[in-house]
Length: 158
Picture 1 (cartoon, one colour):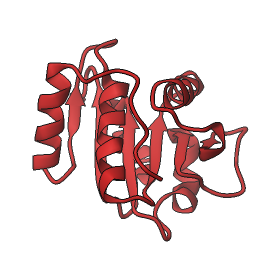
Picture 2: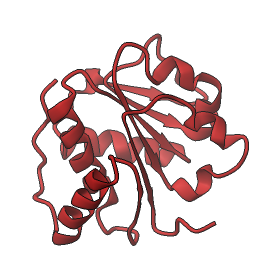
Picture 3: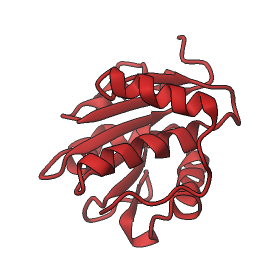
Picture 4: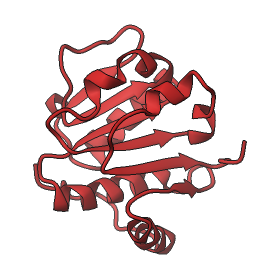
């Protein structure tokens, strides 16, 4: 898959943060105020990964169903992803197989992260509201061999 085109151009902070994230071997946490463009920044990072890994997959962990829905809309509307390329994973949704873009509620992902992360595809992990992933139980959802990682939060300190 080639990198989809973003609907919006990056803001200055997103360009600077993207350079810093790449310099840090594509690993890091972005601390950005609510409504400041965290999702678009993550999509910029995903685009860079797709530039280098055409067959890359993405695991996006979120704390709530409402964020699962928001990410789905953003991927489709702002990042140009086809609905068939997105798998939703939660207590009530368990697809038969992973897709290119996998959005999972973190509480559910603890049990099946192995099914959606890695495999034969290079995989990037994105954790929205990363400060909520710090518990011992939620840490189980962060296990995997990821080519890139990104945490997003307005308040990453815990």
